Image (cartoon, rainbow, N blue to C red; front, side, top):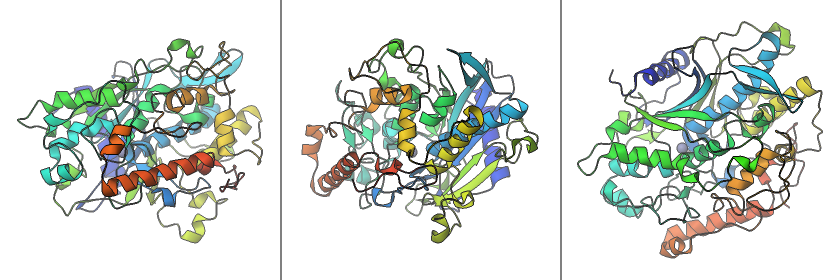
Length: 501
Ligand SMILES: [Zn+2]
């Protein structure tokens, strides 16, 4: 086994062992997939470590198949599933901690309130079996791109022809891999040119947003107080395969990953004074591993027969705490061991659940554990058990996400990016700093002014590409008019807001 970094390679080997020997849900060649996992480790890397979540997948739903009641996963890329699995693991770990303590998290008091945090010296890191889709993969993909496809996608014939967009053009967006020779572009998840457009941000864009918002999401952030939970390091596979006489691609790809997965936000977000204390940019350390992933596209072979698997695997460590709490089984904290909880998804739903069963939103048995509705219910359980707080059925997921105070009110009355008074939810304010009308990701999501487009890029589009962009425009405009159309359900899975307004 070759190794670029010995201590991290031990983690990767363990992740692969969980995947191949414990979970045993594989794509059938010539199908391939991507594997991602989050794990906890200690400062010096010599202490105990634990894999907390693992996901495989390369698919996401097109806009026309998005669900209104939170019952399906819209985005099933491995990185997104691993992150959502970690959110769920942290919420469940709070329940376990209350009964039997935790090796990894602890409570502490801030401003007379109680919060959770990682124990001193504990860090969370991520492994991805290949370079994440979107901005980070620009030159990596060019290294394996055949010239015919490059021409079709308006791309360069070689990796060295990749160009950075001029300073200040972080605003533009692009569908999938179109114009993929441009850096600093917010991208939708890739799809075939003839497929309906997706509204999911690329994994590069999502990972960059975690560098600012933390990985816990709005609901998880409520329990984990000031400081949040941020990825310390991301270890990426397959980069060593991108060798060419053209340029030293490993250095180029490292540059791409450092920029795309957090670096491009530097200087564009408020400084530490934004919240006291609170959200600050935590750029992850980027490292590579040469340990191969057995079901990657490059391992399966890049010929025309290879296709990405429709199945997605979601696994998280430990068992879901049953009710009542005291009958918990022993929590096994040894990395990679313990049964954990596994689900296989297809098209965002639990594999094997019939269309009829999928509509039974009150029966958790048929729901994906990582869908919005399931995580909302777990959050509601925590609110009740920790604070005695019941979430009324008049409140939608979106209402709760944007109003839940996760941190004490800041000393500053206005959001420094928008100049407007803040909502009670610092997480939501931090999100506005990123994606709101003046944020660096404003091209993606314009809740107030409609989205912006880089006019030059738009003018350069031709024929079908231009038609697709127009369709995407319409999709985004609809989303904007209807408010948070996909988050208008309550904890019972019923629509609180009409999807048609
Ligand atoms: Zn992706």
